[in-house]
Image (cartoon, rainbow, N blue to C red):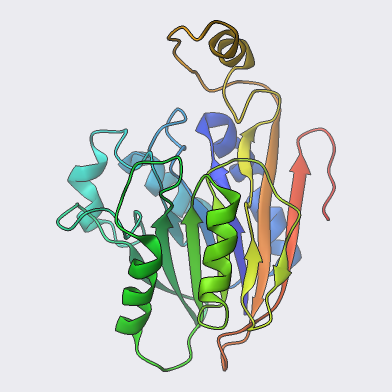
Length: 264
């Protein structure tokens, strides 16, 4: 089966790009299941119940989160009841929500695990041990499993890819908002990319207004970052998974820009 995974959606510009381009991508690639990282969907920080509904109505089957999971106060109040939304599984015990879900759509089935790195990010529980624990809970039967590893350090992401090679169908990195061009299928059959990229403002700094970011770098004074406006770019990956073995046969980058349409 084909799975479309969409990089971090940033603000209203990202949601606009999603609405415009997702139908075209579905027609072109025929994915059975569509997943997106939505942790920046609400003004660049977190997600709301209304945005979850909006994204599902667009055709996204499941949404993952990351370090901004709780930036919208309402998220903690509805995440337990929202079966198509997960947060990093290595948050402390008793944190609202869950870190793994199984999506069934178009006659296909995909288990998604969300993890968060610890290098240059808050010190959560060990994502490597948590991955092992969750995979053990699934049993030994082959199944398609995708891991969204929301992490800052490329070394930690690459290490996770090797740690899970042959045990999951795909490890896709999120968080840095810059699409990496190291996509490959590892020897054990796990599709891997260090970062899928983002869907949102193209001409800011990681989706934020660039003047505010420049001011912060140049002065080291406090400043409020605001999601940029203007033209968007759209980053995602298409992964081919074998339902019988749980292995992947290929991973392809997708790169679109609002005024320059092209795909790798």
